[in-house]
Picture (cartoon, rainbow, N blue to C red):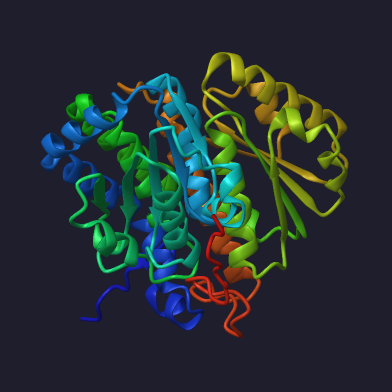
Length: 397
């Protein structure tokens, strides 16, 4: 009897292999599972993590810098709003590319600093050099390294450092595909978990609910996302407020990466979009609005949704959120419902991880639709999985 072919994201394995998209499809699909594993790892190491976090966050006037390059930088942007509110401290998302090119503008000698580095490989030149510069400039530096590669330079350089906390993600999150997917979301989840280590049992419960919700979202919406991917569009704009701003940016990057720039992608906030960027709209564009669950922020997201739908011509509007009223549902071209989970920690903290699944799947399916190889959308080497060609310069003190 012939074995039934397994499908991933609704596509059989043979097709995924032939279009060179199997790794990326697997990595998108595995996220709910690796999130559970990552949360369990935090629990297993909760005592060491708790001791470290209590020590470093007790430093008077300490600041927290969330850093990384590209998608890893957007992980910091996604975590920043929630952590600022949670910790009541100065939390800043600053890309390693900014820290490296202009360190004196960001690194302050006499302020105790916790540098939280997000890194899939841990080998990006800017990530390694940013740590070097921080050590040279800041008198009292602490590090939290969140990485998917135990053999990366960031991990190896901090293994025995008492002022550093190394958090290794499940090995499968060291994505083989070009685009960061499970690496991004698992690092975000782990960062949120680290700073909620006092409530790790409840955080694990939240992770279970998040994972179930995402598995259900994929099963329920895959066909509609595929239909959207088959639409003809040359531009896509992602809009998100608060914790969803970083996700809007990451969603836009996923489209650019996986379509090799054939689809022009941009991002903004719903309020910021009116101040010029809205000019990008044409008949071949799609605007995706991530609707916040935070009651006040949500008002602005819905206001723009109403405006876009009222002024729409041939362009399309996609709404993604919870409890969207029927009037908007009837007018929008596509609506994707996200379960409004009653999390133990603040709802807005984990909502972005529900939202980005849509952005990842749409980007992957659009790449396949355009005949691009998702696992390596730029085989000629202009863009690489780990950045190349960066010349690093010593700091003149």
